[in-house]
Length: 109
Image (cartoon, rainbow, N blue to C red; front, side, top):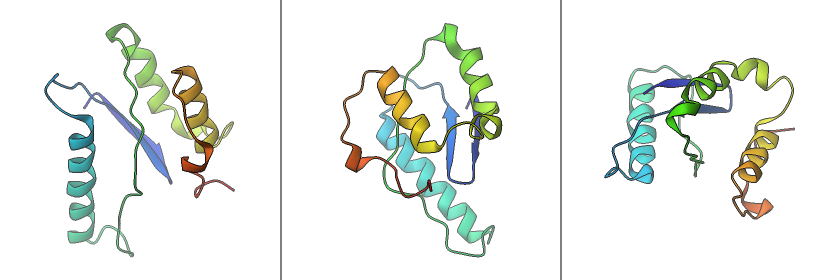
């Protein structure tokens, strides 16, 4: 784990992965283990669970410092743009095709 931060409705993590690790397996384990920890330790008044789905993007080693800075400034960053706006921007930046009906829209007003 190189960096982690977020807001009330999502998190960003920068991870270094070995080539034989599937991102979907890693995310499943992170969600499962963290939900179990939060619920067993009663860290929320309500039953905690993650939403379905995730986004994953790769970066070069040369971009690491700027990505860490971006992650650590989430609160300031989201004063200017919502999670959904940010996600769509990332999809466009990485030239990822998407269908708007499948995007995270249940967070933002």
